[in-house]
Amino acid sequence: MIGVKFNNKHSYDDFGLILSSKSLPLPKPKTESVTVPGSDGELDLSTALTDGEVKFNNRTLTFKFSLLTKSRTWEGIKSAVSNYLHGKKMNVILDTDKTFYYVGRCTVDPFSESKKGATLTIKVNAEPYKYDILDSTEEWEWDSFNFETSIIYNLNEISVTPNTEITIPSRRMKVVPVITTSAAMDVVFKGVTYGLSAGDNRILNIIFSEGENKLKFMGTGVVTIRFRGGSL
Image (cartoon, rainbow, N blue to C red; front, side):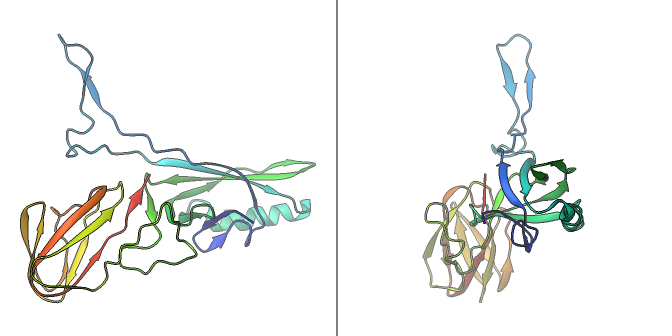
């Protein structure tokens, strides 16, 4: 039965909830504008302090479930769901979108009961982006792979020699990768050279944007590039 997974428990498999509807709105952009006297329109300051990038508010995910079991079981199910979810921060995975997971705090609305059955609504105050199930170093799995939305990164333990260039795809959310090297070397990103020491390196000026990002390594060794993509 199609449903939703909250951390390690599934709405139908673990609670017997039947997903009847869902709402997954896009996050609202954080906008700021001012009226300038003597000029037409408004001055848009939405990206003035964010290097040209629009930021987003959280979004509310809403899942409405039906219970078709006997009425004497409803209170038990309500207690089980509320004790597991209510007020807790969870990873949320839709059976129809297993490539990604949402992160947010869950609330359980009061039951609605009738002679035909009962309904239960779970809301999630979720972060604006949904995240890749697997990070850039993990091997992809058929169970969650989607030919339309999944990205195969293959960025774990790459052998590099001087002038090795790696092209890395990234999603809408900007990310700063962790670059792990077996030996000290340099890396070039957007024409700027940065020194890398052996071990983990996180350089705040190396920011992957949506599309292709190129890293050129000047040295010899093994490199791992770790990050987790985010999509709207």
